Length: 219
Image (spheres, rainbow, N blue to C red):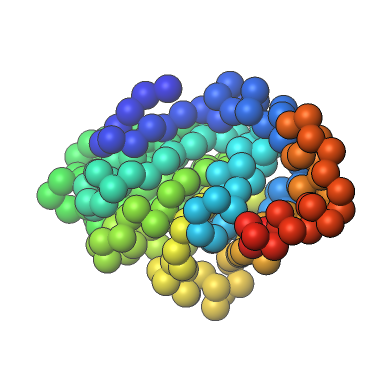
């Protein structure tokens, strides 16, 4: 695990396996794993399990994987580009070979994003890069960088985004049918999921109690 620009960037398999072993693999995880879309957006308020979906997916994934968690410290084009480059370099040899001069994140971050996108298009081995808390990158220049990079994800690979807010920079990708989106209605717990959580906690509530729990928690 290492930190770039205030953001933790980590290889997935070693860091999340222990967490996912205690979680059920939901239909949502199955759905997003098998989506042909190069961009997967999991969008919902806090508490709906967005990170859990990405975590469980990552532990099942057979392609190369990398993970970046964005913080408000990264809401700057140069820092965001540095963070994303570090993540993609773990799964893409062409990205790993990019020079600092080619990226030039401080002086010309958008030009750097174009260089990163070009390297991604040259990537042969399929990969999945997970980017959590994307809502923290709210600056329009940061959104432009994300849009440039996401447009270059090659066939057979994917970038999975988790965000607490809508991501308007995905508009063009949606028009081109390159985005698979998961929202609140997909992430709500059903009765079976609620019962599993209760039983793992040593509680055996009635169906009526579970239904009341789900009603109060809005899923």
